[in-house]
Structures are given as C-alpha cells and as structure tokens.
Length: 512
Image (tube, rainbow, N blue to C red):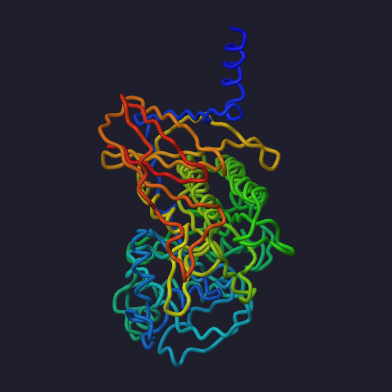
C-alpha cells in the first residue's frame, strides 16, 4: 500500500519525471464569442531594403524571370495563397527619405537616389506609387502607405494623398491621369511618419505630436473616402511616447503604431538565424512572449484617453531579427528562417488575437528576403519559409469571432518568468471552430484536453507544422524540409477533444 501511495504521489506531483505525459487543460466558451479578430492582424510589410522589392516582388517586365507586368509570378501566386489583407510601404526608415514624385512618370526618366538607411545602394525609383498600388490590386489586399514627415513637407504629403485618391479635376488627379491611371485608387490606411522617435526624425513625443497635428490636417478625404490616419507610435517599452500622443492628439488619429522586435540587442551580434542552442531557443520565445506585457501597458494608457476603443493599436513592425546570412550585405538584413521563427510567429499571433478589441492591424517585418520573411528568392528560385506556413495555417482566424478560453499548462522558467509550454487561441466563423495550439517544449509531447462547452460538433481535422530539429529550415536546394502535414493525433468524444501535441509543434484544428 505504501509503495502504491508513493507512486501515485509521484505521478501527480512530478508528472514528467515519472514518465507521465504532461497534462494540459483548455476550456473554450464559444457562446461568449463577441470580438472579431481583424483580418488586418495578418498584414505584411515591404520596404525598399535589400532585395525585398527589387528581386523579391519586382523584377521588371524585361526580366527573364517569369512575371506579369514586372511582378514575379511565383511570389505573387504564393502571397495570394496567404490571402494577405494589407501591405505596408515604402518603409520603415526608407519612408522618411522617400519623395514620392521621384517614383512616378516614365521609369527611364525617374531620378536616382542613394538608400542611406540600407546599404548605401542606388535606388532607381522604378518601383513607385503606381507599381505598389497596382501590386495591391493584383494581390487583392489593401495598401497601407507611410508618409514622409522626417524629411518631407506638408505640401508633399498633401499632394500625394490627392494624387492617389482624388477623382476631381485637380492638378494632382490630372497628373495621375497623364501617368496612365484614370481612376483613383482605394486607399484607406495612411501612416503620418514612421519611427519619428528615431530614423524618422529623432523627435521628442511633444514635437512629433505637433507635427502630426499639422501634417494630418492636410491629409484630406476625397470622394467620400475617409482616411484611417495612423500616428507614428512607440518602440517597445517607451510608454511616455504613447502617453503624450494620446493626451495631445489622440482625438485626431484613428490608429497608433507600435514596434516590437524579438532581438537580443541592437549593438554587436544578434546571433545566428540557424545555429543556436536550446537555451537560446527558449530565450527567443520568452522575449517574443514579452510583447504581451508591452501591449497591455500601452493599451492601459490608450484606455485612459479612449475608453470606447475608437483608436486602433497597430503593431506595424514585429518579428525576429538575427545576424545576416554569411557573405551577404549587412545592410540588406537577409536572414534564414527556421522552425524557431515559426514558433515566434504563432505565439505572437495568438497574443494579437487575445487583444483584438484594441489591436486592429499588425505587420510582420518583412514580406520577402528581409528579416522574418514569408518568402526567400535568389534569381529565379523561390522558397517558402516556416513562417509562411504559419500564416497559411492561421488564415482561418481572419475576421472570425474570438472564442474566450482558459488554459492550464506545465510551465518553464524563461527569462525569470514561468511561462506555459502550451499556447492556444480559438475562433468561430461560418459554423466552424478553429483552435491553434503551440507546444514550445523541445522534448516533451503534451496531452491536451479541450472542452468545447456546449458547441455542436461532429468532426475534427487538423494540420501540423514541425521538424526533426528546431534549427531546421528550407533552402533553395531542399525546399521541403519544413512543410504543413495532416494532423491525426486528435479525437472528438462528447464535446471534448483529446490531443497528443508533439514537441516543438504548431497545430491548427478545425471542428465542425
């Protein structure tokens, strides 16, 4: 009896040590679903940086690489699969050195410039306003423009808005027509500057608030279209920036941006994208999860001035930032993408869902060939990254109702915090429930029980993203190392799901 009793205690308290699969309990409340997860949380970002634009999205009509009017066919097809809702352009730091009139008219007559922010390369402006907005139409996504406050004038920004959106008999609308576009584009999202605390002008929050008030006044609405004006918000932990902007100009903005990168530090080595230890892996996930506390604190400030949540929090730059791949230009920020990056993407999206009543948009940095990209290209070759597959699996959450949930999970101590090893998010749309699960543990599978609390269910299917090691990644030579597969280790019985969640895995379930 004594031996049996001790064995029971061992099973209950020690769990993993005694060989028992860890237990995770999740309870969903489908009947309480009220908040919509905006599709714009799945936004993308394209900057004139490295080969994001040139060679990534755009090769020109005379390129031997298969293209449609200069846009890469393979990349466009892959992005359409993601159903990307919006695309931010032209930056980033590049935005506050970009003068839009240099990028219109005959390409051969456009003036060149030096891209001082990113590698000192020569920018020929062959990809400009028309090329970007036509790309958005091709992809079926909404454009999100970042205007130049740092080195541009009020007049310049005002005329850009007019050129793009006015249907009237006005100088800028007529200039657009002469350049080949008869009808105005549909543009809603407009950023008034970018990182104005840093590369966008090194301003104080008080000074930028005054600049925002001035510049945004002349970003006029044309033809009944109301611009969604986004103020240049804080970096990471700068809560004073949010305080000053909300207090001084909150009533004049529709959105406020926030930037947060999962990065070791801004000075010296940031670490390899592919060669890292288990300790570095867990540090990375812990750093990425700290965005939740950052979001909570910025939201608390916004709530003080905007109790009705009229103003959206726009996390319009986020993702991992590693050392560039060996042999590449340090200013091009070209990095590989492993299962670790996919885990960061999935964990971050689960958090963004949780605060969907305030977060109206996020934009991962960046879409092709830069930082935590969806796609890598090299001449005529293209490879899809693990992060791409997370966005493909998770697209079922776009514009779905967030289902509240409670979760009880084993924890790991990471960066001096106890962190649950399983993360979850759930939504409901078109009679289907989707549940996204992330098991961060490198070694242990998790035995997950999910209660659906009265939801009518009849069938469950799933997809999984995992790999032999967390360092695995797809290359141009071997593109199928990491890909989505059918997930079969799930059972549905009387309104409960039983899931065997493998180590270091991302799973999305669909319940009918």
